Length: 224
Ligand code: 5RP
Image 1 (cartoon, helix red, strand yellow):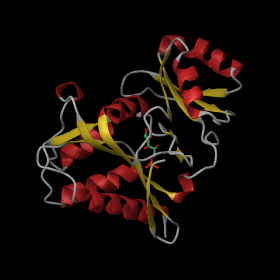
Image 2 (cartoon, protein in one colour):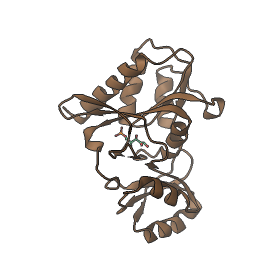
Image 3 (cartoon, helix red, strand yellow):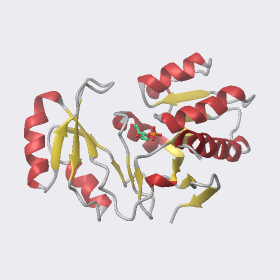
Image 4 (cartoon, protein in one colour):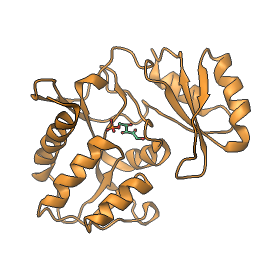
């Protein structure tokens, strides 16, 4: 199956699973990326009722609005019942690298508010140890140089991504890190002054993951 077909398959599988759980008074959290876009398509085609959605990016907000799905400001909700998002890498214990699409900060905020985080990926995202995919780190523009220096001291090779995030910040994509202890690495990178967020999602891991296999079959895994 093509990568696009796998994204559609895994999004549909997660949607069918959640369709039975979602209640009319629920607020959903919606991530960012091409896999989540397929999930939004499923939402748009269904008659599922829910209060609305908290969005993790400008891109997702625009897509939700196109489908007349109500978008609720993050500050106006205290609880997100379920958050659905993709990932760039997933380790065997469900720690993630995210932020390939640049939306890591809002994604992490919404993930932290969610009662349940459901991650949807194809099997190309599964790894034994995080770090082959460069870790995105959102950084205040005025601190990009000093943060890059600190990341180099930790053994990383930071590269400044062109453009700014939805929050007006820069992203450093850091290759060369072997994220064998994701909790430690998430905290260590977050502690560098000037860092807004690291794309390591270890302290707020998904509870459930849907994985599309190359043959189109779906694995539904519940977290350790
Ligand atoms: C965006 C993300 C995405 O979830 C991640 O990049 C995966 O995207 P895709 O579903 O397009 O492969 O973290 O910031």
